Length: 369
View 1 (cartoon, rainbow, N blue to C red):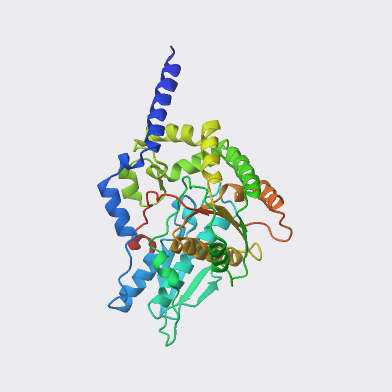
View 2: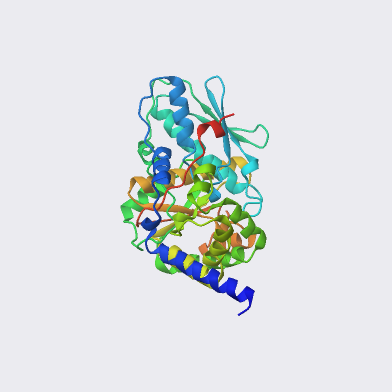
């Protein structure tokens, strides 16, 4: 057997071991990581003793919004009873998100969390688009006499992006009505897909988009940059995707890279991807009013409201990016759904299933300007 054949054989054996860990993710549990995750997602103690403590909690909750590959593309600046939420373009995903649409959607999610928490603490909480530079958001932190806080604030530290398999149960009609209303009022159209024939059409589109991405070397290189293959990496960086979320065991980076390429790419990875997305109880398709950053921020706010409402209903949910990442896939998705006037900007899968390992967030010192 040649050296190359020995390497491939050994790598395949290691991949098989990692795949075996998928059936028992708890085997890879780590006390240090779990402690950091609990601290990241701890519920706020309301009301904070001082205004400065309230502002820090608002920013901390803002960072709990989801983002592509957990890149956390935001920064925050406090200024005279205002919180400015800026895009951080050093954390963009130029291959998976060349137009920065998903970046601004993530920014909208962070802004929505900040809005919810500001009103919970008795502040005005009004949000406005802030077109300085390439755009951001401005949150009013002045005290307000009459505020009706959102009941979704309890869901913020409970929400998690569960990308694994669900149990295929469809939500009730009442739950669907509540979910559909959750993202309203922002000029964003929301279409719910829960019937199995249309879900199968969606799955076909998603599978095709996934297959194209996993054959793209530039995409694979970008994804590797944001994968955290072991606890040391995950705790040091506090961003990106820790592979334990997929059930894989911790590995050194030199080995983790080829193993994850094998597990996530190729026919086997595509089959697993189809199994997971097909198990969803339904999908939500969101379309904004236009193709500008302010429209994408609105989509992000609607996405976060939807995700939080799903959490409040004890459901699991996650944003699916593959069929949104390219123009061709987006056109195919719109055609599959019979959309005429608006192209989809975001796709969310939702349903019922087990929790997954939580992602970390960077400490406030790294995100505050």
